[in-house]
Length: 520
Figure 1 (tube, rainbow, N blue to C red):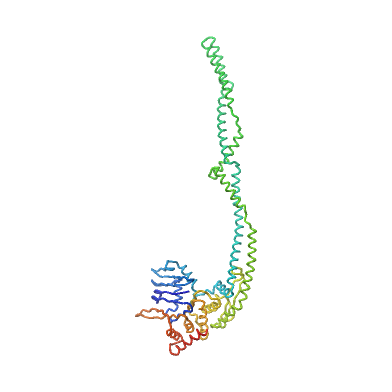
Figure 2 (cartoon, rainbow, N blue to C red):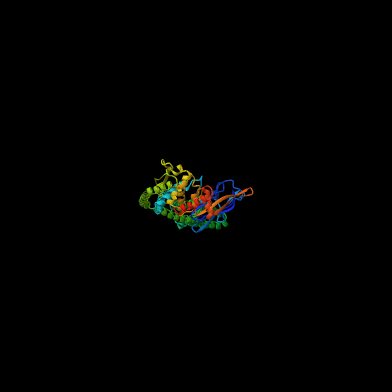
Protein backbone atom coordinates (compact mmCIF):
# COMPACT_ATOMS: atom_id res chain seq x y z
CA UNK A 1 0.00 0.00 0.00
CA UNK A 2 1.14 3.53 -0.79
CA UNK A 3 1.41 5.48 2.49
CA UNK A 4 2.78 8.88 1.45
CA UNK A 5 4.51 10.89 -1.26
CA UNK A 6 6.88 13.67 -0.21
CA UNK A 7 7.79 16.24 -2.89
CA UNK A 8 10.59 18.81 -2.76
CA UNK A 9 10.96 21.43 -5.51
CA UNK A 10 8.89 19.23 -7.79
CA UNK A 11 7.93 21.80 -10.41
CA UNK A 12 5.47 24.15 -8.62
CA UNK A 13 5.36 21.98 -5.51
CA UNK A 14 8.03 23.23 -3.12
CA UNK A 15 7.73 21.16 0.01
CA UNK A 16 4.56 19.12 0.27
CA UNK A 17 3.60 15.69 1.54
CA UNK A 18 0.54 13.72 0.46
CA UNK A 19 -0.77 10.92 2.64
CA UNK A 20 -2.96 8.09 1.38
CA UNK A 21 -5.03 5.45 3.12
CA UNK A 22 -6.75 2.18 2.34
CA UNK A 23 -9.72 2.33 0.04
CA UNK A 24 -10.49 5.00 -2.55
CA UNK A 25 -8.26 8.10 -2.60
CA UNK A 26 -9.43 10.88 -4.91
CA UNK A 27 -7.39 13.87 -6.10
CA UNK A 28 -9.23 16.86 -7.57
CA UNK A 29 -8.33 20.43 -8.44
CA UNK A 30 -8.57 22.96 -11.20
CA UNK A 31 -6.53 22.57 -14.37
CA UNK A 32 -2.86 23.42 -13.93
CA UNK A 33 -2.79 22.76 -10.20
CA UNK A 34 -0.77 19.56 -10.39
CA UNK A 35 -3.52 16.97 -9.92
CA UNK A 36 -1.43 14.40 -11.77
CA UNK A 37 1.39 14.79 -9.27
CA UNK A 38 0.93 11.18 -8.10
CA UNK A 39 1.51 9.80 -11.58
CA UNK A 40 4.29 12.22 -12.52
CA UNK A 41 6.12 11.84 -9.19
CA UNK A 42 6.03 8.05 -9.40
CA UNK A 43 7.30 8.21 -12.98
CA UNK A 44 10.09 10.54 -11.81
CA UNK A 45 10.92 8.09 -9.02
CA UNK A 46 11.19 5.24 -11.52
CA UNK A 47 13.74 7.18 -13.57
CA UNK A 48 11.76 9.20 -16.12
CA UNK A 49 14.08 11.66 -17.85
CA UNK A 50 13.24 15.36 -18.08
CA UNK A 51 14.71 18.77 -17.37
CA UNK A 52 14.42 18.59 -13.59
CA UNK A 53 15.82 21.56 -11.63
CA UNK A 54 18.50 21.22 -8.98
CA UNK A 55 17.05 20.05 -5.67
CA UNK A 56 14.09 18.17 -7.14
CA UNK A 57 13.32 15.17 -4.93
CA UNK A 58 10.54 12.63 -4.47
CA UNK A 59 10.30 10.22 -1.56
CA UNK A 60 7.62 7.53 -1.35
CA UNK A 61 6.74 5.24 1.53
CA UNK A 62 5.07 1.87 1.00
CA UNK A 63 3.79 -0.69 3.48
CA UNK A 64 3.79 -4.37 2.61
CA UNK A 65 3.82 -7.56 4.66
CA UNK A 66 4.31 -5.65 7.90
CA UNK A 67 7.30 -3.72 6.57
CA UNK A 68 7.75 -0.06 5.67
CA UNK A 69 9.71 0.55 2.47
CA UNK A 70 10.98 4.06 1.65
CA UNK A 71 12.41 4.88 -1.80
CA UNK A 72 13.78 8.22 -2.94
CA UNK A 73 15.23 9.97 -5.96
CA UNK A 74 16.83 13.40 -5.84
CA UNK A 75 18.67 15.66 -8.28
CA UNK A 76 22.00 16.92 -7.00
CA UNK A 77 24.63 18.62 -9.14
CA UNK A 78 22.67 17.64 -12.22
CA UNK A 79 22.74 13.93 -11.41
CA UNK A 80 20.15 11.53 -10.06
CA UNK A 81 20.69 9.77 -6.78
CA UNK A 82 18.54 6.86 -5.62
CA UNK A 83 17.95 5.58 -2.11
CA UNK A 84 16.28 2.56 -0.52
CA UNK A 85 15.44 2.91 3.17
CA UNK A 86 17.99 5.70 3.47
CA UNK A 87 20.82 3.76 1.83
CA UNK A 88 22.20 4.59 -1.61
CA UNK A 89 20.72 2.41 -4.35
CA UNK A 90 20.31 2.34 -8.15
CA UNK A 91 17.49 3.16 -10.56
CA UNK A 92 16.69 -0.45 -11.43
CA UNK A 93 16.14 -1.47 -7.80
CA UNK A 94 13.91 1.54 -7.07
CA UNK A 95 11.98 1.12 -10.33
CA UNK A 96 11.39 -2.59 -9.65
CA UNK A 97 10.05 -1.86 -6.16
CA UNK A 98 7.66 0.85 -7.39
CA UNK A 99 6.51 -1.34 -10.30
CA UNK A 100 5.74 -4.21 -7.91
CA UNK A 101 3.86 -2.02 -5.46
CA UNK A 102 1.89 0.21 -7.84
CA UNK A 103 -0.19 -0.46 -10.93
CA UNK A 104 0.25 2.86 -12.69
CA UNK A 105 -2.05 4.00 -15.49
CA UNK A 106 -1.67 7.50 -16.78
CA UNK A 107 -3.41 9.09 -19.78
CA UNK A 108 -0.47 8.20 -22.02
CA UNK A 109 0.64 4.99 -20.35
CA UNK A 110 -0.09 1.37 -21.20
CA UNK A 111 -1.37 -0.81 -18.43
CA UNK A 112 -0.20 -4.11 -17.08
CA UNK A 113 -3.45 -5.71 -18.25
CA UNK A 114 -2.07 -5.52 -21.80
CA UNK A 115 0.53 -8.09 -20.83
CA UNK A 116 -0.33 -11.72 -21.52
CA UNK A 117 0.93 -12.95 -18.14
CA UNK A 118 -1.30 -10.42 -16.34
CA UNK A 119 -4.32 -11.54 -18.36
CA UNK A 120 -3.59 -15.18 -17.60
CA UNK A 121 -3.22 -14.52 -13.85
CA UNK A 122 -6.41 -12.44 -13.74
CA UNK A 123 -8.46 -15.12 -15.48
CA UNK A 124 -6.94 -17.97 -13.46
CA UNK A 125 -7.69 -16.21 -10.17
CA UNK A 126 -11.31 -15.83 -11.23
CA UNK A 127 -11.40 -19.47 -12.39
CA UNK A 128 -10.00 -20.58 -9.01
CA UNK A 129 -7.23 -22.62 -10.63
CA UNK A 130 -4.17 -20.90 -9.17
CA UNK A 131 -3.37 -23.78 -6.82
CA UNK A 132 -3.92 -26.29 -9.61
CA UNK A 133 -1.73 -24.19 -11.91
CA UNK A 134 1.05 -24.02 -9.30
CA UNK A 135 0.96 -27.81 -9.07
CA UNK A 136 1.21 -27.97 -12.87
CA UNK A 137 4.13 -25.52 -12.85
CA UNK A 138 6.03 -27.66 -10.32
CA UNK A 139 5.54 -30.82 -12.42
CA UNK A 140 6.46 -28.93 -15.59
CA UNK A 141 9.71 -27.68 -14.02
CA UNK A 142 10.58 -31.21 -12.88
CA UNK A 143 9.90 -32.56 -16.37
CA UNK A 144 12.05 -29.87 -17.98
CA UNK A 145 14.82 -30.69 -15.51
CA UNK A 146 14.65 -34.40 -16.39
CA UNK A 147 14.69 -33.63 -20.12
CA UNK A 148 17.72 -31.44 -19.58
CA UNK A 149 19.40 -34.29 -17.70
CA UNK A 150 18.66 -36.64 -20.60
CA UNK A 151 20.17 -34.19 -23.06
CA UNK A 152 23.16 -33.79 -20.76
CA UNK A 153 23.42 -37.59 -20.54
CA UNK A 154 23.76 -37.83 -24.34
CA UNK A 155 26.38 -35.10 -24.37
CA UNK A 156 28.19 -36.68 -21.42
CA UNK A 157 28.26 -40.00 -23.26
CA UNK A 158 30.25 -38.41 -26.08
CA UNK A 159 32.57 -36.66 -23.65
CA UNK A 160 32.82 -39.84 -21.57
CA UNK A 161 33.88 -41.93 -24.59
CA UNK A 162 36.61 -39.44 -25.50
CA UNK A 163 37.81 -39.19 -21.90
CA UNK A 164 37.83 -42.98 -21.49
CA UNK A 165 39.88 -43.39 -24.67
CA UNK A 166 42.48 -40.89 -23.42
CA UNK A 167 42.68 -42.46 -19.94
CA UNK A 168 42.92 -46.00 -21.30
CA UNK A 169 45.73 -45.02 -23.68
CA UNK A 170 47.65 -43.41 -20.84
CA UNK A 171 47.14 -46.45 -18.62
CA UNK A 172 48.11 -48.80 -21.43
CA UNK A 173 51.37 -46.91 -22.02
CA UNK A 174 52.28 -47.15 -18.34
CA UNK A 175 51.21 -50.76 -17.93
CA UNK A 176 53.09 -51.82 -21.11
CA UNK A 177 56.36 -51.45 -19.17
CA UNK A 178 55.13 -54.26 -16.90
CA UNK A 179 57.36 -53.46 -13.93
CA UNK A 180 56.70 -52.73 -10.31
CA UNK A 181 58.75 -50.04 -8.62
CA UNK A 182 60.85 -52.70 -6.86
CA UNK A 183 61.42 -54.66 -10.08
CA UNK A 184 62.68 -51.49 -11.72
CA UNK A 185 65.13 -50.90 -8.87
CA UNK A 186 66.33 -54.54 -9.16
CA UNK A 187 66.95 -54.11 -12.89
CA UNK A 188 69.02 -50.99 -12.27
CA UNK A 189 71.08 -52.82 -9.65
CA UNK A 190 71.54 -55.82 -12.00
CA UNK A 191 72.67 -53.54 -14.82
CA UNK A 192 75.10 -51.80 -12.49
CA UNK A 193 76.59 -55.17 -11.56
CA UNK A 194 76.70 -56.34 -15.20
CA UNK A 195 78.46 -53.13 -16.10
CA UNK A 196 81.22 -53.97 -13.55
CA UNK A 197 81.51 -57.54 -14.94
CA UNK A 198 82.02 -56.18 -18.41
CA UNK A 199 84.83 -53.96 -17.20
CA UNK A 200 86.47 -56.92 -15.44
CA UNK A 201 86.31 -59.08 -18.58
CA UNK A 202 87.77 -56.25 -20.62
CA UNK A 203 90.73 -55.88 -18.28
CA UNK A 204 91.26 -59.64 -18.07
CA UNK A 205 91.14 -59.86 -21.85
CA UNK A 206 93.69 -57.10 -22.16
CA UNK A 207 95.98 -58.89 -19.67
CA UNK A 208 95.61 -62.25 -21.46
CA UNK A 209 96.51 -60.61 -24.73
CA UNK A 210 100.09 -60.59 -23.43
CA UNK A 211 100.10 -64.43 -23.36
CA UNK A 212 99.29 -65.14 -26.96
CA UNK A 213 101.89 -66.71 -29.29
CA UNK A 214 104.88 -64.43 -29.40
CA UNK A 215 103.82 -62.88 -26.15
CA UNK A 216 105.60 -62.45 -22.81
CA UNK A 217 106.23 -66.19 -22.13
CA UNK A 218 107.64 -66.87 -25.60
CA UNK A 219 109.88 -63.86 -25.28
CA UNK A 220 111.10 -64.97 -21.82
CA UNK A 221 111.79 -68.50 -23.13
CA UNK A 222 113.82 -66.97 -25.94
CA UNK A 223 115.58 -64.78 -23.37
CA UNK A 224 116.29 -67.85 -21.20
CA UNK A 225 117.80 -69.72 -24.18
CA UNK A 226 119.99 -66.79 -25.14
CA UNK A 227 121.27 -66.23 -21.55
CA UNK A 228 121.91 -69.99 -21.17
CA UNK A 229 124.10 -69.92 -24.29
CA UNK A 230 125.92 -66.87 -22.92
CA UNK A 231 126.50 -68.61 -19.59
CA UNK A 232 128.66 -71.22 -21.38
CA UNK A 233 131.11 -68.42 -21.91
CA UNK A 234 130.35 -66.52 -18.72
CA UNK A 235 129.53 -68.57 -15.64
CA UNK A 236 128.26 -65.48 -13.81
CA UNK A 237 125.13 -65.52 -15.99
CA UNK A 238 124.01 -69.00 -14.91
CA UNK A 239 121.97 -67.60 -11.99
CA UNK A 240 120.00 -65.36 -14.38
CA UNK A 241 118.97 -68.39 -16.39
CA UNK A 242 117.31 -69.82 -13.28
CA UNK A 243 115.63 -66.41 -12.55
CA UNK A 244 114.17 -66.15 -16.03
CA UNK A 245 112.96 -69.73 -15.77
CA UNK A 246 111.15 -68.81 -12.51
CA UNK A 247 109.60 -65.77 -14.16
CA UNK A 248 108.22 -67.99 -16.95
CA UNK A 249 106.57 -70.22 -14.39
CA UNK A 250 105.10 -67.18 -12.57
CA UNK A 251 103.68 -65.85 -15.79
CA UNK A 252 102.14 -69.22 -16.68
CA UNK A 253 100.54 -69.31 -13.25
CA UNK A 254 99.29 -65.74 -13.79
CA UNK A 255 97.81 -66.71 -17.15
CA UNK A 256 95.93 -69.64 -15.61
CA UNK A 257 94.69 -67.42 -12.81
CA UNK A 258 93.51 -64.66 -15.18
CA UNK A 259 91.56 -67.17 -17.24
CA UNK A 260 89.63 -68.16 -14.12
CA UNK A 261 88.64 -64.48 -13.64
CA UNK A 262 86.72 -64.23 -16.92
CA UNK A 263 82.93 -63.83 -16.21
CA UNK A 264 80.09 -65.25 -18.25
CA UNK A 265 78.15 -62.25 -19.65
CA UNK A 266 74.71 -62.58 -21.41
CA UNK A 267 74.54 -59.76 -23.95
CA UNK A 268 70.86 -60.51 -24.68
CA UNK A 269 70.02 -60.03 -21.00
CA UNK A 270 71.89 -56.73 -20.97
CA UNK A 271 70.01 -55.50 -24.07
CA UNK A 272 66.67 -56.61 -22.64
CA UNK A 273 67.28 -54.88 -19.33
CA UNK A 274 68.48 -51.70 -21.03
CA UNK A 275 65.32 -51.63 -23.13
CA UNK A 276 63.20 -51.80 -19.95
CA UNK A 277 65.14 -48.95 -18.38
CA UNK A 278 64.73 -46.88 -21.57
CA UNK A 279 60.94 -47.40 -21.56
CA UNK A 280 60.73 -46.26 -17.94
CA UNK A 281 62.88 -43.20 -18.64
CA UNK A 282 60.61 -42.24 -21.53
CA UNK A 283 57.62 -42.31 -19.16
CA UNK A 284 59.49 -40.24 -16.59
CA UNK A 285 60.29 -37.58 -19.20
CA UNK A 286 56.67 -37.51 -20.46
CA UNK A 287 55.02 -37.16 -17.06
CA UNK A 288 57.74 -35.23 -15.30
CA UNK A 289 57.80 -37.57 -12.31
CA UNK A 290 59.74 -40.61 -11.12
CA UNK A 291 58.56 -44.14 -11.81
CA UNK A 292 57.04 -44.67 -8.35
CA UNK A 293 54.91 -41.53 -8.79
CA UNK A 294 53.92 -42.69 -12.28
CA UNK A 295 52.65 -45.98 -10.86
CA UNK A 296 50.55 -44.06 -8.29
CA UNK A 297 49.17 -41.95 -11.13
CA UNK A 298 48.28 -45.19 -12.97
CA UNK A 299 46.15 -46.23 -9.98
CA UNK A 300 44.28 -42.91 -10.14
CA UNK A 301 43.71 -43.52 -13.86
CA UNK A 302 42.19 -46.89 -13.04
CA UNK A 303 39.82 -45.25 -10.53
CA UNK A 304 38.75 -42.62 -13.08
CA UNK A 305 38.17 -45.29 -15.73
CA UNK A 306 36.09 -47.36 -13.32
CA UNK A 307 33.99 -44.33 -12.39
CA UNK A 308 33.37 -43.45 -16.05
CA UNK A 309 32.56 -47.06 -16.90
CA UNK A 310 29.79 -47.07 -14.28
CA UNK A 311 27.30 -45.68 -16.78
CA UNK A 312 24.23 -43.68 -15.70
CA UNK A 313 20.95 -45.47 -16.13
CA UNK A 314 19.44 -43.82 -19.18
CA UNK A 315 16.39 -46.05 -19.07
CA UNK A 316 15.54 -44.77 -15.57
CA UNK A 317 15.60 -41.17 -16.81
CA UNK A 318 13.39 -42.08 -19.77
CA UNK A 319 10.98 -43.92 -17.50
CA UNK A 320 10.71 -40.93 -15.15
CA UNK A 321 10.13 -38.58 -18.11
CA UNK A 322 7.38 -40.82 -19.48
CA UNK A 323 5.68 -41.08 -16.09
CA UNK A 324 5.86 -37.33 -15.45
CA UNK A 325 4.64 -36.55 -18.99
CA UNK A 326 1.51 -38.65 -18.37
CA UNK A 327 0.88 -36.93 -15.03
CA UNK A 328 1.35 -33.52 -16.61
CA UNK A 329 -0.98 -34.39 -19.48
CA UNK A 330 -3.70 -35.51 -17.06
CA UNK A 331 -3.30 -32.43 -14.86
CA UNK A 332 -3.26 -30.19 -17.96
CA UNK A 333 -6.59 -31.63 -19.09
CA UNK A 334 -8.14 -30.88 -15.69
CA UNK A 335 -6.71 -27.35 -15.78
CA UNK A 336 -8.01 -26.76 -19.32
CA UNK A 337 -11.49 -28.06 -18.47
CA UNK A 338 -11.67 -25.87 -15.35
CA UNK A 339 -10.59 -22.81 -17.30
CA UNK A 340 -13.09 -23.48 -20.07
CA UNK A 341 -15.93 -23.95 -17.59
CA UNK A 342 -15.51 -20.36 -16.34
CA UNK A 343 -15.19 -18.73 -19.75
CA UNK A 344 -18.84 -17.72 -20.27
CA UNK A 345 -19.27 -16.44 -16.71
CA UNK A 346 -16.08 -14.36 -16.91
CA UNK A 347 -16.99 -12.81 -20.26
CA UNK A 348 -20.55 -12.07 -19.16
CA UNK A 349 -19.51 -10.35 -15.93
CA UNK A 350 -16.89 -8.22 -17.70
CA UNK A 351 -19.42 -7.26 -20.40
CA UNK A 352 -22.00 -6.38 -17.77
CA UNK A 353 -19.58 -4.07 -15.97
CA UNK A 354 -18.41 -2.45 -19.22
CA UNK A 355 -21.98 -1.56 -20.12
CA UNK A 356 -22.50 -0.06 -16.65
CA UNK A 357 -19.57 2.32 -17.13
CA UNK A 358 -20.41 3.64 -20.55
CA UNK A 359 -19.11 1.02 -22.99
CA UNK A 360 -22.53 -0.28 -24.07
CA UNK A 361 -21.34 -1.54 -27.46
CA UNK A 362 -18.13 -3.11 -26.23
CA UNK A 363 -17.41 -6.78 -26.78
CA UNK A 364 -15.04 -8.74 -24.58
CA UNK A 365 -13.90 -12.32 -25.15
CA UNK A 366 -11.42 -14.77 -23.68
CA UNK A 367 -9.35 -16.55 -26.30
CA UNK A 368 -7.56 -19.81 -25.54
CA UNK A 369 -4.40 -20.26 -27.61
CA UNK A 370 -3.20 -23.85 -27.85
CA UNK A 371 0.31 -23.65 -26.49
CA UNK A 372 2.07 -26.17 -24.27
CA UNK A 373 4.04 -24.44 -21.55
CA UNK A 374 4.65 -24.17 -17.85
CA UNK A 375 1.17 -22.72 -17.24
CA UNK A 376 -0.83 -25.42 -19.00
CA UNK A 377 -1.84 -26.56 -22.45
CA UNK A 378 -3.03 -23.13 -23.53
CA UNK A 379 -2.22 -19.47 -23.15
CA UNK A 380 -4.94 -16.93 -22.38
CA UNK A 381 -5.57 -13.80 -24.40
CA UNK A 382 -8.20 -11.10 -23.88
CA UNK A 383 -9.94 -9.76 -26.99
CA UNK A 384 -11.81 -6.46 -27.09
CA UNK A 385 -13.82 -4.23 -29.39
CA UNK A 386 -15.41 -0.95 -28.38
CA UNK A 387 -17.94 -0.99 -31.26
CA UNK A 388 -19.31 -4.52 -31.09
CA UNK A 389 -17.37 -6.51 -33.69
CA UNK A 390 -13.87 -7.41 -34.97
CA UNK A 391 -12.54 -7.90 -31.45
CA UNK A 392 -8.75 -8.01 -31.29
CA UNK A 393 -6.03 -8.32 -28.62
CA UNK A 394 -6.14 -5.42 -26.15
CA UNK A 395 -2.83 -3.89 -27.20
CA UNK A 396 -4.14 -3.52 -30.76
CA UNK A 397 -7.52 -1.91 -30.14
CA UNK A 398 -8.03 -0.48 -26.67
CA UNK A 399 -7.46 3.23 -26.00
CA UNK A 400 -6.08 4.48 -22.69
CA UNK A 401 -9.49 5.31 -21.25
CA UNK A 402 -11.00 2.03 -22.44
CA UNK A 403 -8.12 0.09 -20.94
CA UNK A 404 -8.68 1.80 -17.60
CA UNK A 405 -12.37 0.95 -17.51
CA UNK A 406 -11.71 -2.59 -18.70
CA UNK A 407 -9.10 -2.93 -15.94
CA UNK A 408 -11.71 -1.94 -13.36
CA UNK A 409 -14.03 -4.64 -14.66
CA UNK A 410 -11.28 -7.23 -14.47
CA UNK A 411 -10.10 -6.23 -11.00
CA UNK A 412 -13.65 -6.33 -9.74
CA UNK A 413 -13.78 -10.01 -10.75
CA UNK A 414 -10.22 -10.88 -9.83
CA UNK A 415 -8.86 -8.33 -7.32
CA UNK A 416 -5.18 -7.48 -7.26
CA UNK A 417 -3.32 -6.68 -4.06
CA UNK A 418 -1.46 -3.77 -5.69
CA UNK A 419 -2.14 -0.07 -5.43
CA UNK A 420 -3.92 1.08 -8.56
CA UNK A 421 -3.34 4.67 -9.77
CA UNK A 422 -5.80 6.05 -12.35
CA UNK A 423 -5.41 9.38 -14.10
CA UNK A 424 -8.71 10.87 -15.35
CA UNK A 425 -10.48 7.58 -15.91
CA UNK A 426 -13.74 9.54 -16.15
CA UNK A 427 -12.85 11.07 -19.54
CA UNK A 428 -15.87 10.70 -21.81
CA UNK A 429 -18.17 9.45 -19.02
CA UNK A 430 -21.04 11.41 -17.51
CA UNK A 431 -24.49 11.02 -16.04
CA UNK A 432 -25.58 7.63 -14.79
CA UNK A 433 -22.48 5.93 -16.23
CA UNK A 434 -20.22 8.07 -14.02
CA UNK A 435 -22.27 7.10 -10.95
CA UNK A 436 -21.92 3.42 -11.84
CA UNK A 437 -18.18 3.92 -12.36
CA UNK A 438 -17.92 5.63 -8.97
CA UNK A 439 -19.69 2.73 -7.30
CA UNK A 440 -17.38 0.26 -9.03
CA UNK A 441 -14.33 2.14 -7.80
CA UNK A 442 -15.74 2.26 -4.26
CA UNK A 443 -16.49 -1.45 -4.34
CA UNK A 444 -13.13 -2.35 -5.84
CA UNK A 445 -11.34 -0.27 -3.20
CA UNK A 446 -12.54 -2.74 -0.57
CA UNK A 447 -9.95 -5.21 -1.88
CA UNK A 448 -7.20 -2.88 -3.11
CA UNK A 449 -5.99 0.68 -2.66
CA UNK A 450 -7.13 2.99 -5.47
CA UNK A 451 -5.87 6.49 -6.19
CA UNK A 452 -7.88 8.41 -8.81
CA UNK A 453 -7.17 11.79 -10.41
CA UNK A 454 -10.56 13.00 -11.56
CA UNK A 455 -12.90 15.80 -12.64
CA UNK A 456 -15.94 13.65 -11.88
CA UNK A 457 -18.14 14.73 -8.95
CA UNK A 458 -19.52 11.18 -8.73
CA UNK A 459 -16.06 9.62 -8.32
CA UNK A 460 -15.11 12.35 -5.82
CA UNK A 461 -18.28 11.49 -3.86
CA UNK A 462 -17.21 7.85 -3.59
CA UNK A 463 -13.85 8.58 -1.95
CA UNK A 464 -12.64 7.51 1.46
CA UNK A 465 -10.01 10.26 1.33
CA UNK A 466 -10.32 13.42 -0.76
CA UNK A 467 -7.18 15.39 -1.66
CA UNK A 468 -7.25 18.84 -3.27
CA UNK A 469 -4.51 20.57 -5.24
CA UNK A 470 -4.71 24.33 -5.71
CA UNK A 471 -2.44 27.03 -7.05
CA UNK A 472 -1.51 29.98 -4.82
CA UNK A 473 0.79 32.98 -5.22
CA UNK A 474 3.37 34.77 -3.14
CA UNK A 475 3.87 37.96 -5.09
CA UNK A 476 4.34 36.85 -8.67
CA UNK A 477 5.58 33.41 -7.66
CA UNK A 478 3.11 30.56 -8.13
CA UNK A 479 3.19 27.37 -6.09
CA UNK A 480 0.88 24.41 -5.55
CA UNK A 481 -0.63 23.58 -2.18
CA UNK A 482 -1.96 20.12 -1.36
CA UNK A 483 -4.48 19.48 1.38
CA UNK A 484 -7.00 16.90 2.51
CA UNK A 485 -10.66 17.88 2.31
CA UNK A 486 -13.19 16.87 4.95
CA UNK A 487 -16.73 17.77 5.90
CA UNK A 488 -18.13 20.91 4.32
CA UNK A 489 -14.93 21.66 2.42
CA UNK A 490 -15.20 18.31 0.66
CA UNK A 491 -18.88 18.90 -0.17
CA UNK A 492 -18.06 22.32 -1.62
CA UNK A 493 -15.34 20.82 -3.83
CA UNK A 494 -17.80 18.24 -5.16
CA UNK A 495 -20.24 21.09 -5.81
CA UNK A 496 -17.51 22.96 -7.70
CA UNK A 497 -16.95 19.90 -9.88
CA UNK A 498 -20.68 20.10 -10.75
CA UNK A 499 -20.23 23.58 -12.12
CA UNK A 500 -20.35 26.35 -9.52
CA UNK A 501 -20.65 26.32 -5.77
CA UNK A 502 -24.15 27.33 -4.79
CA UNK A 503 -26.73 26.28 -2.28
CA UNK A 504 -28.32 24.08 -4.92
CA UNK A 505 -25.10 22.36 -5.98
CA UNK A 506 -24.08 21.86 -2.34
CA UNK A 507 -27.36 20.00 -1.73
CA UNK A 508 -26.83 18.08 -4.96
CA UNK A 509 -23.34 17.14 -3.75
CA UNK A 510 -24.76 15.76 -0.52
CA UNK A 511 -27.38 13.84 -2.44
CA UNK A 512 -24.71 12.49 -4.80
CA UNK A 513 -22.66 11.19 -1.86
CA UNK A 514 -25.74 9.41 -0.51
CA UNK A 515 -26.51 8.02 -3.95
CA UNK A 516 -23.00 6.73 -4.61
CA UNK A 517 -21.89 5.59 -1.16
CA UNK A 518 -25.06 4.39 0.51
CA UNK A 519 -26.84 2.85 -2.45
CA UNK A 520 -24.08 0.49 -3.54
